Length: 185
Length: 177
Image 1: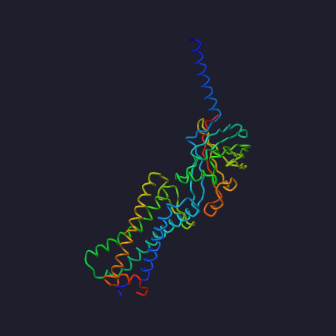
Image 2 (image 1 turned 30 degrees about the vertical axis):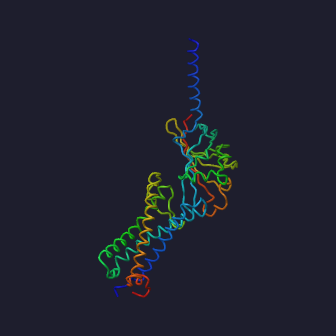
Image 3 (image 1 turned 90 degrees about the horizontal axis):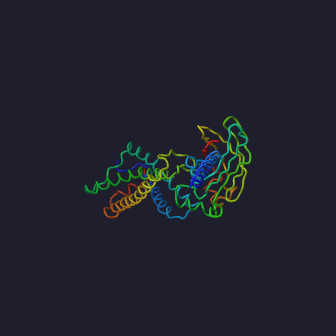
């Protein structure tokens, strides 16, 4: 009896430390974060969020150069606002979400800039194709939470998103902006 | 000569008629199209036509307020009332139908960029429930407007073929007023 009691205490303590460890790992608070792609069709800017993503950001303001980020975005969660179009962009000509369910970003180097700013260079992989991108990011710390804001442009064609027959109505350039909240270290 | 329409009034009548009929045709056709670049184009054309109708209606209203149209030709009182009500309804729809479409588009998350050049202000923010409601208003409005145009055309033909008066002829006349 006493043994099993102390065992459950250890399990509880272990769970607590694990939770604390996760927090220190700066997992992204997805519910309060956003990743929104703006594409242009017939010169009309359309904002469409990715509803599901996960990842971690390691960031210590004292050592910004040691920061790192890893994100995985569920491409099926891309929400244009209409079920038929959402289904369309999952097709092989677009995201091919059956074969490539996730788009990922993994930072490779961080260059600190002015206070609260840094440039993150990393590998963006969509539809199995990897591109190196560089993103200017602003960090805003409130309490124990860091908010990371940034945006970048990508080329649809570089990732093979969309058949060329769409090029006349759909811009190649897609603007992506993100607001990511991480629990602070 | 007060029994004639001005050339401007005639030109506005037929230009707006052609635009509205094209918009109704495009609207009818585009919703059932499979997703394709052409479908997006037709949607754009439909929206641009609607905005053009709205703008031309403003011109037409100003013109009519400053240039009295010729009085209706002699006809029974009920026909006069029916004609005037229908004209009023058609004018109303020249404003209402473009606006419900504009709101439906904005509520669905699509701003309108007139002719790919001029970004128009968003009348409402993205809102799924509002989009669904205005989709209905716009679609029902389109059907009702098509019926109203049909009645208007039938009445004009009746004046021309049955009553044999100048009602249709004077709207077709391009002679100087």
